[in-house]
Picture 1: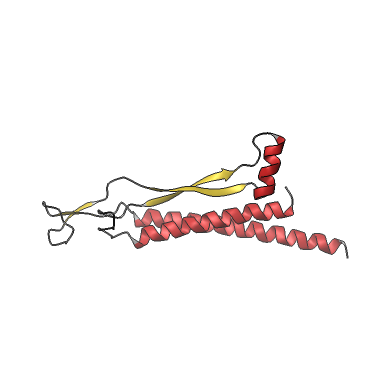
Picture 2: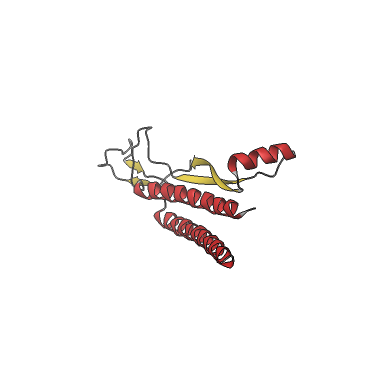
Amino acid sequence: MGFFGSMDTATTGLTAQRLRLDVISQNIANANTTRTAEGGPYKRKSVIFEQIDNTEGSFANILQKKIQSGNNGVRVSRIVEDQSEGAMTYDPTHPDANEQGYVEYPNVNVVDEMVNMISASRSYEANVTSFNTMKAMFNKALEIGK
């Protein structure tokens, strides 16, 4: 892997973690949303990552993949909804209460989301550090030629 390939790999991590942070923020923002356009309470979302793998197949296939993407790294394969039930709270005055007076709240645990946010932030910072280290190494290599 060359210099720019290393930077591309760090960049894929930055992009994936940024999207993860966006989804976590959406979960926290909707932690009390009891009614959505689809009906029912908001459902927590999770980001699923997968490796960008350019090393399978024949030489021609690998070469074509390298030309197209240029790197190995990570990408978001999909965003999934957690289908588990949310908390049921007795509040007969709530506009979304059922016939028994219970309201179903989203299945979002704010503490878990904050832990996920810290994890995503640390991963993002690690990718930034990796990117900056590669940049510094490249600058030092250029100084050797002086």
